[in-house]
Image (cartoon, rainbow, N blue to C red; front, side, top):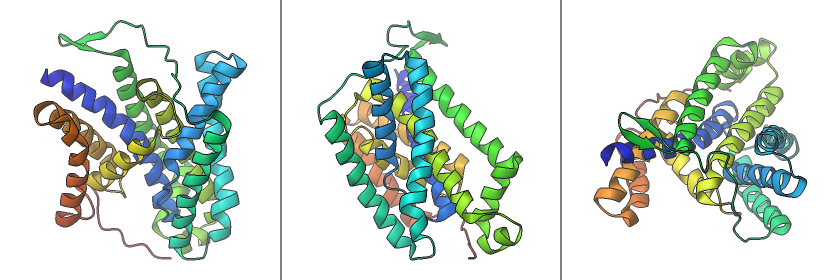
Length: 290
């Protein structure tokens, strides 16, 4: 019983972590908390659904194209909405993402309506894996595997590629980064593109179990921020571990206390961490120079 709850919590935590990673990439590079991240992922998921149901593409092909759409969507939003606000108060850009949240939700509702759709999954009828005698659904295994691939891939990308090093330089000190030839505008566009890509993957994986509608990612966005606060919003590894911890805590709380209290634990964790360790368990106090 406990093993099933832990595995289910890890699978849910990986979904939170993907959204959290998308948020943190943008936040660390641009100082902007992207409150439209969930709606961007939702729109990408609807696009994948349209490719499958409207065009007739197979799941793998539709999802691959949709993930690229998510990346392009992030870049376009950065260029059209965020770039004109660079140099102004960060609060203006944050408010713009809140407005974008409403706009994207309304656009999706206008195109696809506000009814609920069943998003297909190629693993729906696959028999569960037996891991240590514990049956684990294929969807859970895929969520955990994809989550691990994304956190490992993003960590390696940021540490061992020239583009990743440029992004890290921009996140630490924009003045020095400019002197080294790093384009802050380009770094911002790349960060938003990566955020759109990773968020889109999370949406596609979440839709089969949560069902697809315009509010698909609302809860996941809150959980991602909560996991990020728990682990540390300036650390990819911290966000990943924080979201996993949150997913397991929610599952155990729902099983042993009350299902209705499982969501409350999210906000209890946020408040407790903000009081005792504002930078998060795995985070650090970040001093950023303009």
